[in-house]
Length: 293
Ligand code: URA
Image (spheres, helix red, strand yellow):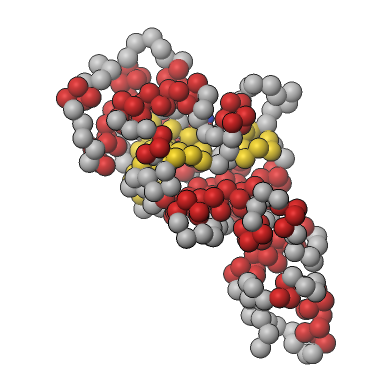
């Protein structure tokens, strides 16, 4: 029986419709298809074309990863989508996910996100994964998360923990900078729909990195991951779960930038980090335990 397998030639040439019409002429009205072929069909359907996207239209992607990017009919249903990266090492898989994100239709469909992808940074095999809100002006320029003032604050926190960026995996609950009218350097938090559109990527990243702990930095990350609208004050100081992985909620580093007076809020963040360090079994000196008091 003919079938639509991932690598079967008819998807490429001649056109898929020609192939299906040939089958129909032969009296074949049903064929089995693989999940990957189903993704391609969805993409073709959404693009209003029976032709597969040509590799040249996705110049930053390898043909294979570009073909694997399925569209989503709506941002909400996009959150349920499972994305399977190609590659054999965690680094290759993260690169594959970033390549898929470049052309992921749900992002464009929203028409509220800017165009530059800021995917993630850090160690794709890290034990600790931090999830922030969305790229801002500086991050978008450098195409790397947390490189602006909030990133400097985050680096300080990591240093106090005895860690560096290279040892952790750092991502955002929204992969593009949310757009505003007449936007210059101003940023805004992502909407629930914008976060939902990135969630399949976050889930896939977690599948690849397999961190032992996730820290959600700020309300957007906490709300997007935990599907709650509870305040940070209610979510801190306990362990939650995301995809079976212990998750801690803390304040966003930019919140600390607005609290330079006094140690109170810094200490709260530090206690969140101490909890994470304890759980990871990282060494904690007496000096470290006493920071920001
Ligand atoms: N930059 C990011 O990448 N994420 C944030 O949450 C803030 C700044």
